[in-house]
Image (tube, rainbow, N blue to C red; front, side, top):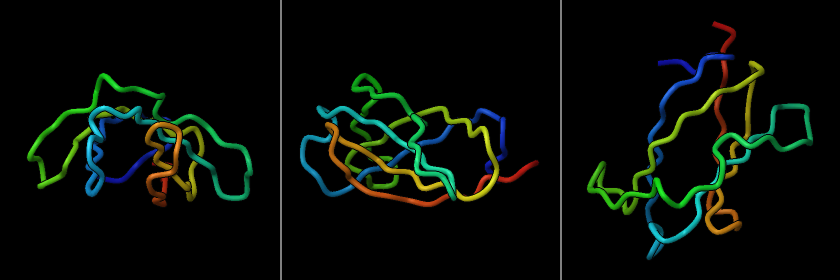
Length: 94
């Protein structure tokens, strides 16, 4: 299913590789292509971290995300305020 500008959807994050992830604060910052300003995509939370065998992940985190602009976005995943990983997503107009 494509990510569409202005439509809030549920997304499941799966994290592998770091011990005690469920005890850490999770946050996602986004940067739209051509911008240098970070936007909070997923506010910092610890309550949603779940230990789960979902896709063999160490931790699975259900979230809702909405993007205000179409185009490419860089998403920085933070655990306890430190960069855990970066992914890129394309947001469509419709």
